[in-house]
Amino acid sequence: MTNRTDIKIESPGVNVAVVKKDDDGWKFLVLKRAQTESYGGCWGFLTGGKEGDETVAQVVVRELKEETKLAPRSMWATEYLVQFYEPEYDAIWILPLIVAVVTPDSEVVLSKENEEFRWLEPRKARHLVSWNNLIQSIERISEELEIYPSRNWVEIKA
Image (cartoon, rainbow, N blue to C red; front, side, top):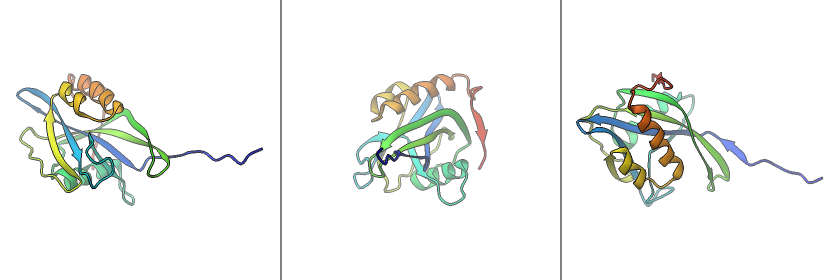
């Protein structure tokens, strides 16, 4: 019998769908990763790693501030997970998908982790993001935003 080992499964952080509602409806914040970062040049949601004993809500607040200078008006746990194989760590990563709602007049100030951002309606956001699991997440979340807050979301506090 061979000595088999499993592929590691980790949940090192969060994936955050940052949204705002303006006169034209709901918009998603999509970020383009800096070329110096992992997945450089790819468009996606805000992501962040957990530090120490932080709760998921605390990770969201800290990462949102660090990467965009935004503060959430509310945060919602969804039933969705973003999962993928992360070759750099030779592990499967599973990240909870959190919705962070910001005010319509929120101004983004990017850190060096990202080089560009756009506020986009769901249809356009789906065409810009780099991964199918984010396309599916945008579809699901945009449907649920129609009855904001969605009945299957749970509000979380930092």
